[in-house]
Image (cartoon, rainbow, N blue to C red; front, side, top):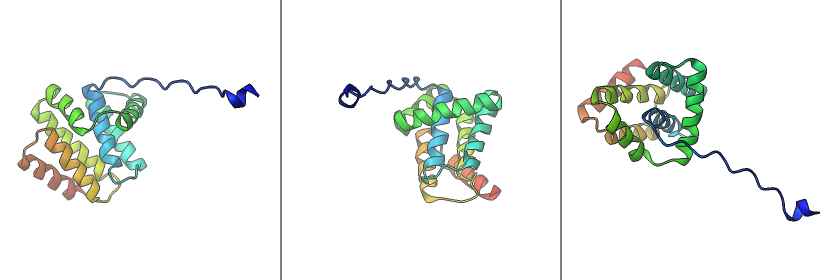
Length: 145
């Protein structure tokens, strides 16, 4: 009877970690993949490959990092805050490479999507990339499609 009146509370979820450059990058990659409201295996795999290659992680470590980034993306600050972390910690050339990586995630499912492209433009702008570099990244990605 008491259980019905006073159900047990669910334990509080684990607090999210403070965003680091690794987590900010991963969260932005997840955000790009989710922009079209679908999250396909090809996109997940591409995010894992990018995280593994960028940070020298084994596949399992990259998948764990991605899972943390997914939670962070759902509950953490918006794109400008993540981009600010990367602008402060990552040099311009590496941010350009991040733009290329984000395009590869957006196109990993083999389809273009306006919502993903809008999200990418917002992220690239927040990362401080020049119009010429954004255009070059887009053209490079679309030519590879």
